[in-house]
Amino acid sequence: MRITIASRAAVVGALLLAGLGAGVAPASAANPAGVASLGSAAFTKGNSAPISISSLADCAVEGPTSNSSGVVSRTGITFGGGTSTCTTTVVDPENDVTTTSSVAEGKNFELSALVSSSGPRIKIKTYKVTCTATQNTTNASWTYGGATGLGTLPSPVPVGYVKPITKSNGTLLAEAVFNEQTLPGDGSIALTMLRIKFAPASGITGEVVIGRTACSPTP
Image 1: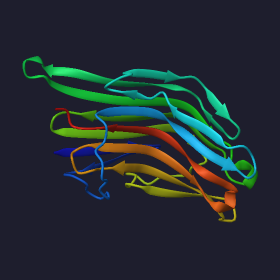
Image 2: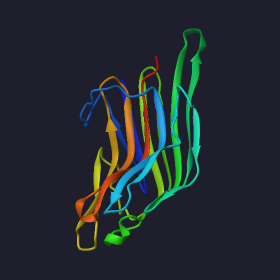
Image 3: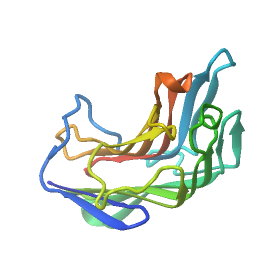
Image 4: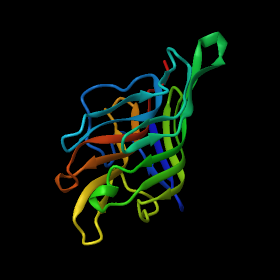
């Protein structure tokens, strides 16, 4: 079984994982056949009402196979909308052999919740996550463009790369975790492009997820 993960930000980079679970702690449960979503958010700032945005534009190869979301905006955060498609293609009808492709594409994400704590305004103009599968391989990839407030990333981006988000004096306000992966050891793979986890100095508890997909080898 071959698993490939690629990433692309401002500079093109790629990470190849040969075999099962290379460089990733194994998980206990298998991943879905094929799913994708734009992201979600759940956080609370100080004494304000909790902010909750359920997973947006979810699709799955079992259905719904396509979905979309318009602009969703709450205090401190905006998902600018996007689409998802989770498709199954029959490549050998006589033997019921299939491939799958699960894709989510979003735009105009903005997180302003850290600005009042002297942190950056985080923007991502476009982003895309993809997971494809055959009987023998799974491939996951992500890309984004037009980002501000996140600094410069290494190329390639390592698995679970943590980018501190700080004030100008170095005080940690949040951690931006890129390229999160879950490899249960059965050939399946789950990928989260970016997870922003708030630190105590921000006065915010919770997290934001941007771009998520997963897939498993086809039967």
